[in-house]
Length: 511
View 1 (cartoon, one colour):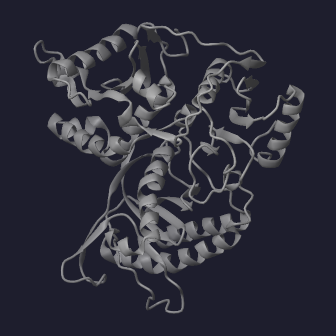
View 2: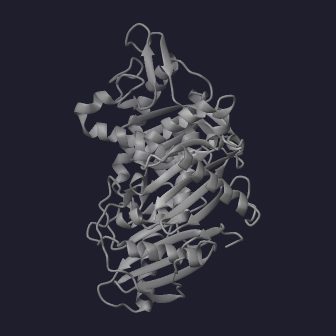
View 3: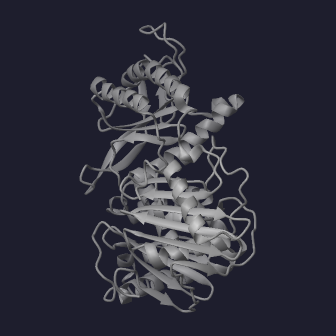
């Protein structure tokens, strides 16, 4: 297919059904009960990073392979064949695909009888990142294979690498071995933890989970961040979380999904596990030791601590001694999202509130001490105030509902869903698990009717008593998955859906 959609090479074509309006769709009865995600390493055949220009010389084609990982431990010759095929596909289809904006990732899908290949081009097409997903293993894992979801996973992996190491081109300058070492270091840690949502649309959207906070506490947070910026002008950007959910930020929106993923799924989740297991707290790497009181604020409660970085004292553990402060460096987009700028990252947490700060200039231990003196009591007090009203929040993500849902707003990148685990959620405890056949139907309907449209509505009833309702209004997308024990008339379902939207999504979804 040529045009706005990517060119697909079908070696083995399978037929999809079509849905018009409200329809009955036949679906398998399999309802395997599994978690809401599967591990990437359980279904992949290979993943690679290639630099085509490095393999132009005949006999040295293998030098284009900068990273390759496969459970089969493929030979160098096989790696060259796989990456060479990917390069050939990209070059051959170049004249048949519509040119995209430079900010977008060019991509190709190749379907064979055994694998789905997905290739993306990064950094102006200088590098190719590709993967082959085993179709049989995907079926065994009850995972619905979707090219658009795998493409989004590859893009996220690249952005995660770029967040910590910068672009490939910077690392390769003058020494390709340095880039290869960094790729090996990164993927050896990233791939074992990489999980794919069983609902592929969640990976496609790659959104952010916002917390809908009351206006008073939201203003308190904004005031704290404003005062923080005035007191410490070295701080250029901030991100604020409560209960591992985003509240406010001033980083580029292009960096937001990958930054939130790292903070919530890795750094904050690890900290939370440590907090729930006090005997393991010694394993947390802190910049500063916990201080219960401070000379300037002896009457205030201090529950703050640093989560990222390391301080190595030169004499002893006193923080006011001369120290060598080492902070992690991340690469974020500038205000125009045109170039990457290195920042030192500080992550500070008090109770359930977390502030992530990004600093241009190098800082010393005295700065960290002053920041701890200021932010510890202030953030502790603010977190306590938020906690008092947290239980009364009318947040759909924390409710126990009689339906499954996905809501996505591409403008704010807000993603709310009942299809992922939430540590403080009690929702859907009585709802049956969604079979993979329903996920497949959702993706097929979305691709057919709503992916390229800003407005639309589709309803479908599966023969397994599942209803699928999708609405798209001004790009905002809402999916409802309902289970009906008895046949229900479409008019009754429509009224029920309207009631659900009015009660739960009225403030975020206009219809």
